[in-house]
Length: 242
Ligand code: ADE
Image (cartoon, rainbow, N blue to C red; front, side, top):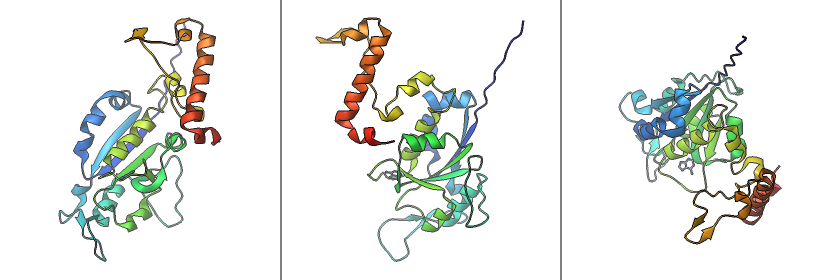
């Protein structure tokens, strides 16, 4: 008897550079992330910027005055460098098998499904979280992409980094059932169709009859139509995207 053993090795390394590594404990030890780590689909390493501060200072007042503090360039640069990032000259170009350095900032490109799909191609992501008034601008020379999770300001980049990691990891092969990714909102530029579960009647509210029919072709037709109607009424801009 021939046993065919197919081993899929998808390995993405993720370094998170932060002043507050403890914030990530629960996030990494529960649910989807911990399963992906257990299955060795990803490995996540928290890099504490404070370890790289020679004089114990990670922030300082902004040149030119103003409110708030700015993260100093030296400890942040050393923390990024410790992940294996090398920049030899200004003409450095990233590619999928080199570390890709992302800075979470409200000034970055607005995160969407296409950016997430692109990130899944990298073998090594380095995610830098800012805090206070942000980071010294000169560190941007070591950043490949700035990403924002929305037009609002959070007190730090840790929550945006979690959003980015979660959205990226769930797209990696072997993490979720591929069917649930295909049915997700934003796949094919459509929002998700409505979902129902037992009981069939909840406080007088019923479930669309077709879902109880057992006719899978009709169910799929209904779901496609509902996804389209929802997208057209709530996010018509998605239907115009390529
Ligand atoms: N840091 C603070 N606010 C942010 C946002 N909206 N997106 C990404 N990083 C941030």
